[in-house]
Length: 152
Image (tube, rainbow, N blue to C red; front, top):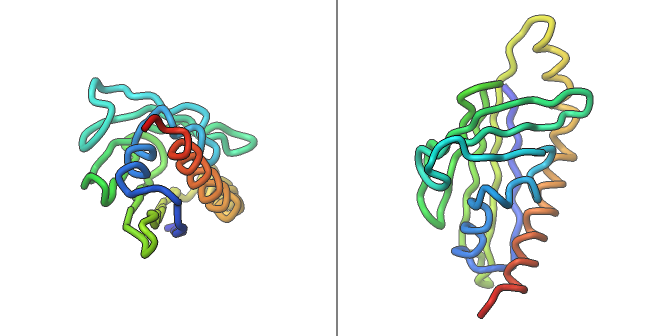
């Protein structure tokens, strides 16, 4: 079982940061390797929404279906795979001392064994660190830029 966790401060209020992060149209802008993130249910936000996504892992593209399985507005949400490798991704939001938002991303995954599973697990482990740094930089940057350019 793999586990990756990272926390950083985004300079925007919690409600703005949560809304930006949970808008499926923004996901490919900040999520490492995601080339597609499209709703496959009428519901596009909140508990029960399901998305088809593709994650570029270098030599291969990993198709996934993910469902929002936990949701508390302005606090956290969890995406869980329903098709593809077994994984959950939880994003937690908390107000920082200066009024900004602490955003914590937690990813847990399980790759099956066998001939295909072992090389895929090694590939995911090799990109986990760079992926976390990418998400940290891009998610905070996207939130802060969108907040700076919002209409009053």
